Length: 86
Image (tube, rainbow, N blue to C red; front, side, top):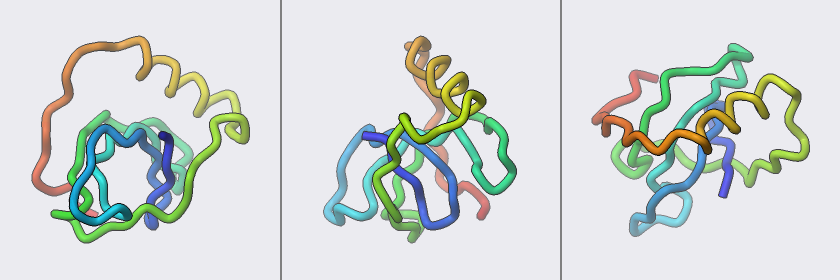
């Protein structure tokens, strides 16, 4: 499931936690900056950030779709980070 966070970062849910609004998410796009970001997997329950909304890829522009497709095609694991510095 693709999601938009409260801070306008976009990612894909990759795991669950005790709080449904704070899953583990693989972030790949910063909509505030309108740019791809270094892909990172973040446990939102540790960051205190919530999912704001389901994000439908059909509403994205070509740039976000391109980044999303690259993310889908890569099977390399990403490094778990303890803080995303936001």
